[in-house]
Each structure stands twice: as structure tokens, then as C-alpha cells.
Image (cartoon, rainbow, N blue to C red; front, side, top):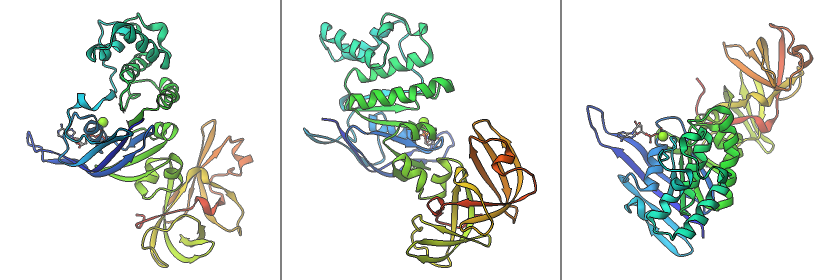
Length: 373
Ligand code: ADP
Ligand code: MG
């Protein structure tokens, strides 16, 4: 009986105030978040993620558009419903636990408000604390917990009321790097086990990649692309998505020909075969941006197909990987990431100034709309 969330053409314009101009934080966003899905809103700071999440929660009224909650029982347009009527659970960046209450009392609070009987309440609190592996801390005060533990309690507090939709706004941002990694898996496990439809906001692409069923990438208040982490990483629709989801080389290209086996594109005098989709409306002669991820380049031999020629400029050893940069002419640099590197010489990147051929598989040559600058 999980809930599907349908967002139709939602916009929010904050009115002008204190000398600031009116600004459209969310601009005609349409999304369907499936029942039981762990769905991410990903984008840089200021792109409208929090505003969109708060409209789903009912804390902010949209300027236009609609929000629907659907389940087996039926369908409701909740756009102007007050927050408390929507049955959403929310977890914020700051844990916002009540310091004078124990962990159990914090989690129980929402149930008391809903007048759940004491025995039932106790059972549900323990169940929620077990789900986040905090049952041993039930009688502690929040100040006696680490940040990661406090955030687990905040999650239990949101889950205990069995919300129709769980909303998380950068829940890991206040934690140190190690805890963030640990809690990624933990939060995913808890959300999927609960079966509750979850919308998770973050600016951290690794968090989204490692946790999400699907991700919507937002740019300046608009959804640019929706897909699984792998779809977004391997087949970005725009340069913004390609660069936001990971490290990539963007090269200037021109489409040469379109054949059954793919598209050939001229990149600085070299011909590359690409098996990616063509940008809409592109044809032979069209300028395109060619995106090649750092890890997709390997050392090739001159004369091979799908090869770019360059001069080694520098190499940086990073332990698990080594990063090499090559000058491709026209002051254009290309970065190559080699995993599990031995010595630079063994990898073939031995001498600064040497001329090298870089190979890329057709599947890894991604064509994006627009002309690279
Ligand atoms: P994000 O969560 O992605 O960082 P926000 O939704 O917080 O983005 O903000 C989106 C845009 O709306 C930003 O330009 C921000 O400055 C503006 N904004 C957010 N809240 C308000 C507000 N209460 N009044 C006016 N402008 C706001
Ligand atoms: Mg925000």
C-alpha cells in the first residue's frame, strides 16, 4: 500500500523582499515517484531541492502546479493540504532531537500526538529503534550520542509514525566522511525494508549514485534528466549532467557520418566511433560536445581505431589510482585515470613529453548537444 507521488508542473516563485528580486526556485517540475521507491533530488546548492521537498511535505505552498498522493485506497490532490494532514515524515540536516528527552521519548513523541496507546507505543518505538540499530540506546539523552547515532534516531522518529512518504533533506551533511559512508548503506537498507516511498535530497553525487533507485538531476529549478544512477552516468543528456555526476573530458567534435554501427565524429583531426545516442536534431556536419570519462581512456597503439594522440604533461600518483594529463593540442588537456597503477613506466606513462595514443571504446564516447568552448 505504498504511496505514489505525482508532481505536475510545480513552480514556486518567492516574492521580492528586502531589495531582493522575485526568484523562481522551482520551475515547472513534473515527476512521478513510484511506490516504495528511493528517489533522489540531486543538484548544486540553490537549484531548488529543499523548496521542492518542502512543497511535497506541505511546508511551502506552490505558486502553481499540483501534487498527488496515490495508493490502493485512491488518489488525493494534496497541493494545499496542511503538512500534518499529509502523513509525511521528515529528516533534516540538523538532527533536531529534543535534548531533555531520552531517545525513546524523542521517537515516541509523534505517536503521543497521534494518541497511540502506551503499550502499542512502546512496541512501535522499539521496532523503529531496532530498524536503525539503536535499541540499546533507548534510555540515553541525545547529548550522549554521536552525530551519526543522533541521525539514526531522527530517522527512527520519522519512520515510527509509518508515514506515507519519507522526506530527507541532506541528512548526512553534518557528519564526517567515514560516518557518511557508513550511513549511506544503512539508510538505504532501512528505507527499502520499510517499503515507504522516500524522497532524498542531496548535492553529493556519490551519495545519490550509491543509494538511489532513481535520480532527478536539477539545474536552476528545473529537472534536466531522470534515470537510474547508471543511466545518468553512462548516458547523460547534457554536459551539466555529465560533469555533475563524475569526472569527464569534454572535447569539441563534429559529426562526420551516421552509420549502422554508430556515429563517427571528428575530434581534433582524429576520428572516433561513438555508440551513444545522437543529440536531438544533430546531423553530419553538426558540432557536438564529446564527453569521455577519465577512467574510459586507456593506452592504445598508434594506428589503432578510436585513438586520440597527445603529449604527456604530468602524472599524479594517488594510491588506488594514478591520474595522467595529456596535451591534445590547441591547449586542450585530457585527463586519464588508471586504476590500481603500478609504476608509471609499467603503465606506459613513463616520460613527461612523450607522445602517447589513448584508446576509448565506442560505448564510452558520449555525444552531447552544443559546441564545446
Ligand atoms: P537547494 O536546497 O537546492 O540549495 P533551495 O530550495 O533552498 O535550494 O533554494 C532555491 C532558490 O530559492 C535559491 O536561489 C534560494 O536563494 C531561494 N530561496 C529559498 N528559500 C527562499 C525564501 N524563503 N525566500 C526567498 N528566496 C528563497
Ligand atoms: Mg537545500
